[in-house]
Length: 349
Image (cartoon, rainbow, N blue to C red; front, side):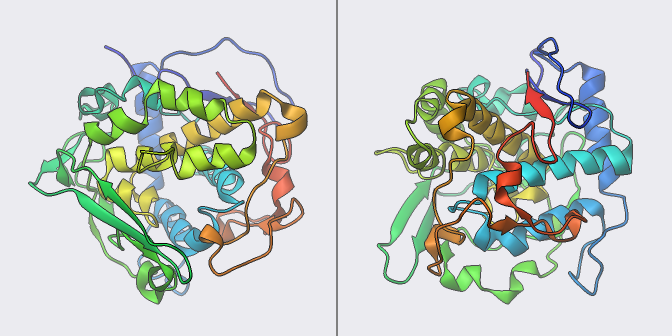
């Protein structure tokens, strides 16, 4: 049987990178080791206590809460790629230090599942998968409206998937997600809603959509992304899409899984989030390596979502932070532009 994630990246000791043989698959035991570490993290005492965020009951919940809290400054803006690189790496490090995980963070190569996501071994519901689809609930396509003052309204239609309900198969069946169910839309009122971090316990939901995966996550779209001549085009193809398509590759990964993964704010509630963002990071790394001199430190955009509210162009010395997920506090974004500099020392196989 084909195994996920077919490839993975490897973390090495700080400041020393060694060439290693490429690993095309994870063994069943390696998959279970990763899954068990994620389940372990859901039982570790949180760092964000009730006085900070009501409802966090584990270190896993901490990550979801921080992502929700910073969503207005880490999406559709300059920090997006570097912040999520640091966030995913910190998650992997936490799996290591808190739960004894000694493998590497897997990534999800979407292209291998673009035409058959519903039958992918990643989502087949076995004990070595990332769990299955949600229970089938008949529903219509989702209309997603993005609107900000002084900007044209953007309307996207997300094709209905084949699930929609609770995940009841695989290792993450019947888990409780602490936060989420915020809104499919994006506007100033939702971004600034103080209730976004309210404790809303619910089952993990998925709504796998072959229609989204087939249209957005295919190899042609990935090749087109990697052919981007500059960071502006790369960001457009990744996050906004191309003419005639309603989603970029980043959004396509979220909405092909749907359910909690389709929530702009709280998507880290689904463990597949981290495999998805490792893939985003992998493609950014590949694109950078095609012209390191020009692309290593390329940034585009401001420090607020879709530049709302209007903010200055983000510079390499401007800082990002992970709140209590990282004891280091805010650091310049330039520290996170390479996988082999700053706190990082990993490569993709």
